[in-house]
Image 1 (tube, helix red, strand yellow):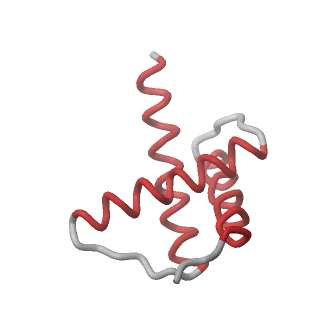
Image 2: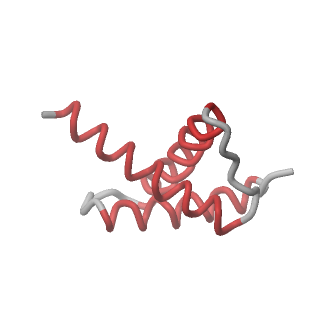
Length: 81
């Protein structure tokens, strides 16, 4: 079933905010939401390819979103230099 749209936005925003704090990125609220959601989608896809599935609950998706958003920030920084 999944988290739903509102929960995905909340979890994505929180994940993006935490990832931007960890990575010391200066992003705004909308960028945090996008980073968190896209990061979670990308990392869930990668994990599924290797046979790992995160539960469709707040905490597992928050962790996946934080790690995914951090990876996106690192990739963006790597391509900018």
